[in-house]
Length: 279
Image 1 (cartoon, rainbow, N blue to C red):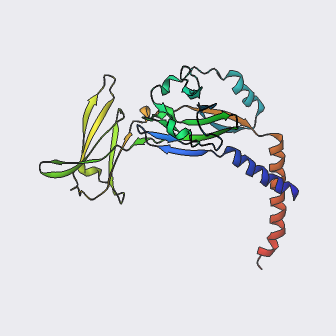
Image 2: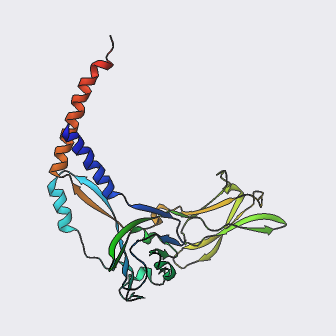
């Protein structure tokens, strides 16, 4: 039975190690990546940074040859730095910052004295989807925290009320650019009102991408809540994400524990089986 408890404890440890706070955000909005340390009391002698790690998805590989073949041919050289934000000597140090985040990130200096090092990321895009690590060090301590940012496949632009031909309408404008935008309108009961809306091209690029302007004529009630949702309908032009897939071998320890766990389950089932027999 000791093997069973050993296996259960291993699962708990694996789950604890893999659990990361997750934040979901709509594209083209501003988000705050939370970070707080009790040992941080001000900017004096404080050094902290925000770095990104690409999201890695693992898949099990039973064959050792397949596992090592992947690592032999995989290109581990990364073109861009992982640094998103760096603070030292009472000032921002952004010379080595990843160009993807230039002019889009900031930390509220007034909140640092309270131990808050949260990062404001503006105009979130699909390439921002990653795991972000906040690290801090002072003479009183050091610490790390991580948060996983997931960017939704659709945007929900702000809905505004207007009048057209003496009729109340709801409007929305896409912030993103699309080849084939699909605009969906819903009310607070999540009823699909899209058939009562129109979509017009607001702005177009030379490469065929464009922004849209949509009008809902339901009739619209000014005390109702409406949601405008815009997504790319063309599968060939869905958002590009940086997700690295890695093979994962089952270690001999885990294989042994899994075997023992299966044996225990089988023996337990055989012991209980007579109690559930009929006749």
